[in-house]
Every structure is written in C-alpha cells, then in structure tokens.
Amino acid sequence: MDEVSLNTDPVGEDDAEDFEFVGDCAMTEFVGQTGIIQNPLPPAVAMEFETYEDVYYFYNCYAKEQGFGVRVSNTWYRKSKEKYRGKLSCSSAGFKKKSEANRPRPETRTGCPAMIKFRLMENKRWRIIEVELEHNHLISPSSGRFYKSHKHIGLGTKRTLPLVTADEVQKIRLFRTVIIDVPEKLKGLFEYEAIRMALTRTVYYSLRLEEFEAAWEDMIQHHGIRDHRWIQTLYEDRRRWVPVYLKEIFLAGMFPIQQIEVSTSLFEGYLDKNTPLKEFLDKYDQALQTSYQLEALADMDSRNSSYMLKSRCYFEFQLSKLYTNEILRKFGKEVEGMYSCFSTRQLSADGPNVTYTVKEQVELNEDRRDSMDFEVLYNASEMEVLCTCGLYNFRGYLCRHALSILNQNGLEEIPPQYILSRWRKDIKRTYILDHTCSGIDINNPVHRYDHLNKSIIRVVEEGRKSQDCYKVTLQALDEILNKIHLVDKQV
Image (cartoon, rainbow, N blue to C red; front, side, top):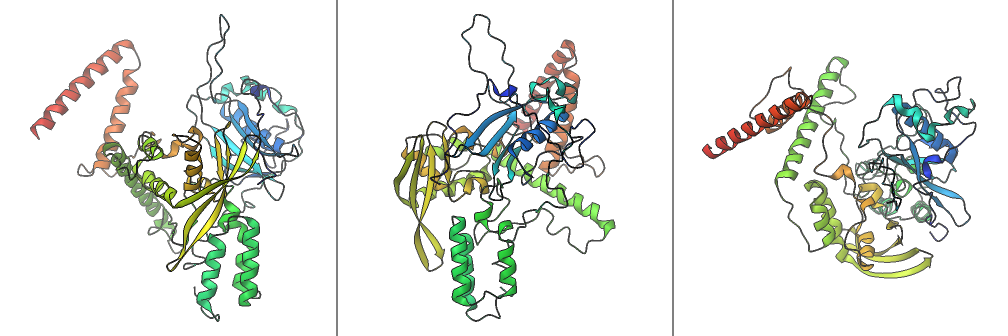
C-alpha cells in the first residue's frame, strides 16, 4: 500500500473537456473504414483494454454514439508517476466553479452521474471496475458531434483495440458452493474437517494476495493434498472466485464474501437446465414479474415506514433519510461492528494520504474468535477512504473499519461519493408492469400501484402540451385528490 498514492493533482474539471487522445486505436469487429468504432457496446464491469488511452477512446466512441461528451474526472498516479487508476465522466458531470466575471457564462452542467472507473491490473491490462450508464439529462445521438471530446475522434487508424470479446470474457464464476455445498469433494480425504476449516480460513480471511498464496501453500503442504485434482482446479480458477482477487471490482452485493452467505439467482425455482424451450419464455416472464412485485413492495415499505435506528451514530441517521430499509438493515450491521473495532493507530503518512490499522475481533468459527488487522487509507483533501477488506466494492456501502477512521477524524457524515443512487428509496423505476393481457388484480397493492402509475403518466403527458391543458390537469388532479380524501374518511 505504501507504494501507491492517490493523485493530488487531478485533471482540472474546467479543462477536462478538451482532453483528447489522438492515436491509432480502434476496436475489433466494430471498426469502420473511418477508424471509428461502429455501434460500440456499452461499457461493462470486467471489460479489459491494453492501455489507458484505449479505455478513453472506447468510452468516447460510445459517448458519441449515445450523444454526450466525455470528461476526464480524475487520474491516479503511483509514486513513479505511472497511471494506475482513472475515472471518465459525462461532460455534464459536476458543476462549474462560480465566476467573478460581470457576465458569467450560464451553467450547462447538471451533476450527471454517468461515468466509468477503471484501473491497471496485475496483468498490466486496464479493467473497468465500476459503471454508471444513467444520465440525469436528455441525450441525443444527433448531438454527439458537437462535443469537444469528439472533435478528432476519427483520426485513429484501423489498428484493433484488443477488448476481450463476448466469447472470451472470463465472467466471474460465483463459486458460492465451493466450500459450503462448499463437501463431497473432500469427504474421502483424511482429516476432512480440518481441511475444510483450513480452506474456509484461507478463502474468507485473506486480506492480501500474498496472504492467500501463503495460506494456500501452507494448507496443501500441511495436509498433503497438493495432487488432489479438485483442489488443483480451485487454485487454477482462484482469480474468478476468491474474494481477495475480486475486491477491485465493484460488485454491489452480487458476490458472497462470507462463508455463511448464499447468492441466489433471480430465476431459481423457475428455470433450470432441463426447462424445455416452449416453457422458457413463460417461466422467464413469471420470474421477472415476481421480482418486480417484490421490488415494488419493498419500495412501498421504505417510503411508508420509518427505519428504526439501532444506534446513535450519525452515519446511520444520515443514510436513514436516503436509503431503502433493506440496505439500511445491512449497513446497520457495519455501524454495530464499529464497536468491535477496539484499536486504531496511524501506521504512516505520505502527503495527504494517511494509513491506519484497525483491529477487530472476528469470529473464525463457532468456538473461536481472534483479532485481525485491517489497513485503511484515508485522504482528507479528497475525502477518500479505502479499506483492505474491500467491503465497499463487494457490498456498495462503507465497512466498519472505514467508518471508524472517518469517525476518528471528526467526520459526522459519509462523503457523498460513497452514497450510491442505486440504494436510494426515492429512485424512480425505469419500467412499469404491463397487466393489459392478464388483467388487474385489485387485491394486489403492487398491481394497483403500477396501473395507477401508468395511467397518471398518460395524464401528465397530455397535460404538459399547452398552458390550458396544464391548468385543466391541475384542477382535475385536485378534484381527484379531494374525492380520495373523502373516501378515506368514510373508510
């Protein structure tokens, strides 16, 4: 960790729109005769590129196709001045600094959240680790050519940009059953229980790559299982399922990082490998409908009921105003866990970057607890906090160790970049259930909600067409609301 430092001199927000790469990079299977990527795929987590410039070129081509500009929000450097991390944003991200000029230019930015984050991996390729595709403003493909970042986008030649194709992408295999279901592969071995416990400790309690490698070597040597074929296969696939290898990827709850966790599929109980093709679409649709209904019920629960705070910690109070009840219950466990972090001390300081160690009592198994040291890097000027446990990338909210350091440094609120829109209870769903074929079940609150929502949108669309329509719509809505209140009183 000492060799890595956060960039203290990021690309300026006001100048970043002019940042552009001119070079011979393009993309396999999507390069036209002009050298421009044709119909580029949307960016996705785990996409890999050869160079920093290739990532920019790919995202810029995608942006032009969609109709928005690109800004380099930040670039992080090692002490050796080598780039190791970057963030590209929509050109409407953030807000311009206030100008003292007599006639300042009007604000054109909207604080748009659309962006990608990427970093240099051990294999020297650049991997996308976080993606936000949604914009908070209108975008149009016809306006893409007007942005500065697209001005010289056609200067590249037809050298292929080696993005891993769909067939080659090594998708993260959720080996959630490695140790739990994760036993018939080991039961024939002598000292099975001891091997299972050693495997569990190695997988779930290694904080660094070197710790995992050393613990794995010690396990196979101590138990004499170096030639066990299944164990060999697990090790060969370690980069696709061991948490310590995946903590740089933003997974937001999709990957189990503890032994007791189980990651279930949306389609579990509906589809399996034996589902005949003629039933596939119906079962697929049933699974989606159930998922939408459960989500809508959870939305209503979060909007209509208050979350019972478990502590007096202001972090929890802050998020209770914003987040859904379900994510608050999960975050509450981290707040409670702050009290098991019994010791924090400063290890080192390098400019604005201060490294702390946080001790925590953890439960290794039912009969044994032990203390573990977690390193937390804190940068006060950037309001950035990084923990070796990697919980933020795994779950999408800060861990107890990071919270302890923020609290120790006098922060009363979680920095805004760690508050994700995906967990907010006021987020608007982008889909509306269509019950026109199957009819409305008026006993189902989800059906009632979605049908009313769909109906009111049609009213709004008509009401916005003119001032007269607008006034009539407002008057009608007031009358409807008064009638509903009368019904409520009668009930």
